[in-house]
Image (cartoon, rainbow, N blue to C red; front, side, top):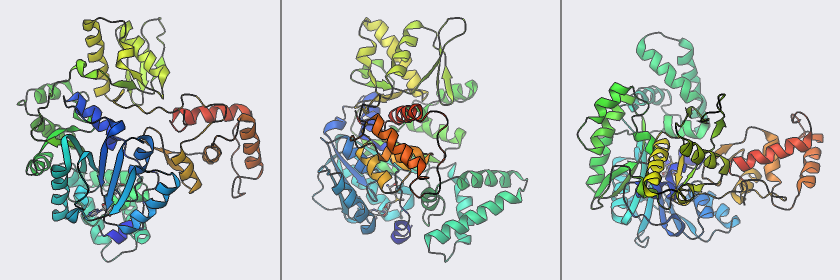
Length: 497
Ligand SMILES: C[S@@+](CC[C@H](N)C(=O)[O-])C[C@H]1O[C@@H](n2cnc3c(N)ncnc32)[C@H](O)[C@@H]1O
């Protein structure tokens, strides 16, 4: 992808939760490493763009140092005023080519590179992995995301079609419009052969992508997927080994039919081979792989004893059982009913604490070692199923709105810049669907109590919104709607404690 083409389209409000030092440290700890504490570490992001991913981390971890490098001076120049406005002394964005990194960078506990490896040519791609090998500390962790085969053969088919269609079209808005038009045409053709059906389904999904993602992922000029085993071999040439995927959930066999999972479980005891076969059976298209130095001794079997010092968090919905038995816990598409009161009690405590986290020590305070390990194993299994988050350095947003609620300074900056996608204090992108919620967020600088906020919202509604074209008022009583909206912002981890 050309630098100029990319610069015209930015990723406002996007942050990648899986790249956060808390995530990388947690995963490394589970696999027996002793990673640097997220609250006191050095992080390098290669291809950091305008710092949209790095700046929120620096805000949340003031004792750590963050360096972002990017080839694009335009992107770096976009990030600089945000850093100034938020007065962040611990983050620097530098214009640099990964092929010629400055000599004064030093060593890093975490090196992250999201959305870069597959989208650059062979030389910078190799330089990116070499930089991880050269700059990581002894217990350091690198995160690299990339498009993966075999799933990306489908992407290749789509890319070939779009590349032909967009030949000679340089202007980003026009590329986007033309790509959307052709994809819609293929969808409308509704051809019924198996390949046509797969492509139609793919284009239907891609048509839902926001412009930045479509531009970067689907109509990029360079898009080089690799098999996991090729990626790992590449890393090995630079003294690095496969640690894990960034999300434990992505390496699990839970969602596969039992006989398939059983067969994969019987593969040789080699983490990479096992992961590679998972990719074959799930047709994986994208990976977020963690690497560490090849001399680190990893412990690959999960062990509850490594939960010491870690914390659990999850927005679990608790559905009581009709017969007074154990409740059902629901998170998104995952629902489960623990068979044991002790596990239910732990999950209830985690649900009640959201958006805060609960330490494993607190959950197991009165248990002997056997009971503690059993509960730990059960919680780890639920974490692996994707229903519990695990933290080394949990985010600590306000659990309930204060009397003068305060939003994250970054979210305030983002809504002031006209965005409705903001970055939460748990390093997640939050799309605010409702203009009233966006306006409310913009008022939360700590200077207004509930009465002031209600007056301001009433004025906003009476004036038909900021542009006077009209805003749908919330149903019922405004004071109650304000309380509900504030509670929702707290739940989304957008309010500062
Ligand atoms: C697709 S963007 C990803 C940006 C960001 N990491 C994200 O995911 O939102 C790829 C970034 O890599 C940068 N890049 C491309 N080639 C590079 C190189 N040789 N050295 C440093 N950065 C490069 C581009 O300027 C661009 O900002």
